[in-house]
Length: 603
View 1 (cartoon, rainbow, N blue to C red):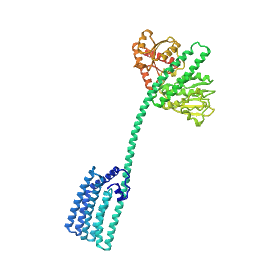
View 2: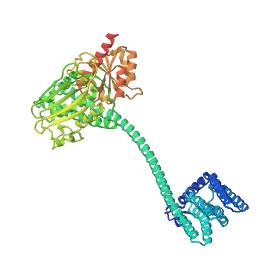
View 3: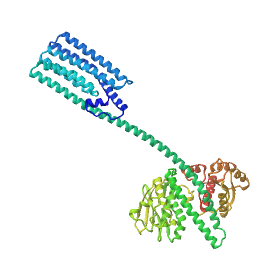
């Protein structure tokens, strides 16, 4: 029996699906019937013995009772064995197997219903008891054969119709009433079986839908996994591109910056000096823009990892004020810092310096008069740092927008001297990365206050970073070896270092640098991280120190990742990030010389 036959038999909607789906549906129905029939095999046998006992006690001929019992048991066993085989014949079409089940169930119903013939020999009381047992037997079939409605109707009809007929043959009003009740009970059972079939149909549909949904979810998970893997690979490619771009873009900028500084020291006429100043300003603007763009890209790519360490906050703020004070004074502003001595924060010194630099730079650019003040309040679990200005202020509705990229509320004409709208976006990203909570207070025309909750550190380290230096060191007559494979950058280093009073020896390869060691006897080596040769800058420093023990060194790179900084710390060399100004170059060399001297003294 197919899905269409099912709809005709019980009124429950058949599955509107392909023939394969209908076949699977019918196979499921058959499996349920086979399982229930096998489970009730013993109970059905006991009921047959109960019917035989009632007929025997009620006065039926023992021989007829025995013949009936043997017939029922034989049909029962034959049906059970046949149904089991049909359930296992998965290669056969389902429709003929369903028909065979219906015919065999009809045979069992007629065999059990034939006990009604014994009612002709029974008193009315025993006949009524026998009828009740038969109807109970047919009622039990609702739970065992309802999944094959044709088989259920055949079974119930095979039992109820002979019983009703025997009562009608008695021809009295009571017997006719009992016959009507038997037929009514059969109709109720058929209706109840149809309702069960509807529930089965709905549950099967839900099961199919759940399986389909599970398959869809599984496929979506696979797609998400593929998309995640593609995103990870794209992120790695992006990281590699950023590293290469940082190096390739900063190399010429490094040369321009140092050569511009060297040019500004030359004896020039007024017009040439003005041109040199404009060149220097343009290079600095380009450096700031490149730094901002690359920083945003790296932070969004998730390739930047903070290297936390204790930082003396008062010295960091004083160093930042020293760096930005010329810009503030050029606008007629007062820049000051109020921080008690001995306060220590736990953070990444480079990232924290960049975050605060962006806030200070932003405050100076948008303040016409008054000043910018940095203040610190010590709290039990953190330090509250406030960057306050007396500038144009920010409307309350715009106070969160300023942390979005390319938003410049106070720069309607898009004046690039006021920046590119990336500074506070970098502040937002760095604060999230460093675990710093930030907030803003501002009113139009009354200035702005940025509040930062900085995590406290345990102890202050010895000063060694250029970020904490306010004044430039003296490098007169210091012997410096420069190792860089870019001739323009080597020339720029030579001009800048000679202008600082250093004796400079430039090498394009490690072999040249090793050959120059005996003659030049450098005190410090300025080594680029990316060299054309197979080895990187750290390997080059190791080779140079093997030939000249005690040689100080500085590693130069456009990459400022935590991994590279950790490697520099293990080797024991300061890092200089490209593009570096002349002051930053001098500070890094002084750090390298002092750190090496301190190490020799300790030894």
